[in-house]
Every structure is written in C-alpha cells, then in structure tokens.
Image 1 (cartoon, rainbow, N blue to C red):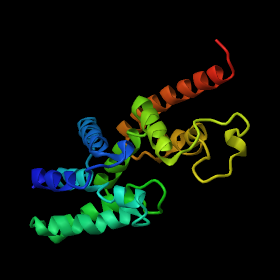
Image 2 (image 1 turned 30 degrees about the horizontal axis):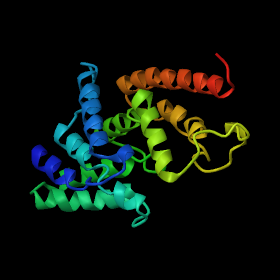
Image 3 (image 1 turned 90 degrees about the vertical axis):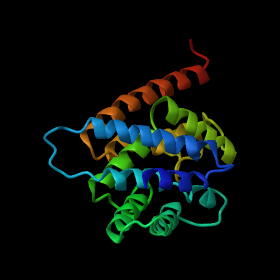
Image 4 (image 1 turned 180 degrees about the vertical axis):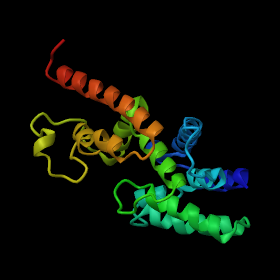
Length: 214
C-alpha cells in the first residue's frame, strides 16, 4: 500500500510552493529512513513503518490549500484527507487513526504532541528539513513568496514582535534555531544540533556581510 499512498499523495503538489513541494516530502522520506536506520538496537518500542511512511507521504497534502487561504490548518485538514485516502485504499481503522495522529502532530505551531514513535519520527524528519543548508534555502524561498524582507538592520530579533518574525533573518531566531528543542529521538536530536550549528554560522556571516565587514 505504501506505493499507492505515495502516488495518491503526489497529486496534491502540482504548482505548490518550492518550500513545501513534493521535493520537500521526498526529502522528509529520506530523512525518516535515516532516522529509522539510526535507531538504537536496544530500542524496544515497536515501529510500524507502513504507518510512518504513509504519514510521511501524506503530511503536507493540505499545505497548498493553507497557503492559498482556503483552509486554516493544513495538518488538521490533511489528517481528514489522509483518512479518506487510506480508507479508499483499504487500510484498517487502526492504521488510519495512527496516520491521522502523525499528520496532526507534525505541525510546529499547533498544540498536538506526538504520542507515538511514528509521529515522533515524522516530526523530527520534517523539522530536520527546515534546518541546515536546505532549511536556509527553504526559508528565503518562502519569505520571497510572502514578500518579506531578508533582513532589517533596524529591527533586531529581540525587538521583533511579529509572529514568526517580520524578516527572514528574524524568522531563524524566532523559530528555526529552536527546532532542536522539539526533536523527540536521539538520532533526530543529534542531526538537528549539527544542522543548527550550520545555520548559526550562516547567520553570523550574514550579519557580518550586512555590516560591510570582511
């Protein structure tokens, strides 16, 4: 069923934002595979990979609708749509509910805490794609779509009260750099810290260049 879910999910991403397109979903899938491989052999918690990867493919099917202002919460809408897709493909009720929880819990800004291993792995993989070099590229791409400035030297992060930050530079400080604190697995935490360090070094150089320094 995993291939069928992937095929159905891909149809929701035509003409979507570069920051949340099908390439993003594919990267999240590869990151999820890495996190699964890095699990400790002594980890006794059972993992259902069918649930995990169904959730990976389906987690952002509602993203373009939210970006267009058609829905308020792509995670909630996506969970409902994921249930419809999975039921249509013959998934049992337990699988449907498990995937729906993963989809609801992956979003950074909602209050749904991942309660299962599959939900934790999806959340970690999704957050990892917002860090590091790819995360930097995604952040500025999305900011360009919104028409937000890259940086405002008169508005440092500490004085920016806008939700998520009024500039993309401030968005890193408001959200992106805190993502390692929202990782749930040991492997995810290790990868997130390494990617966070890369972002910190980039932001330091960015500020120096803005100031006209060498």
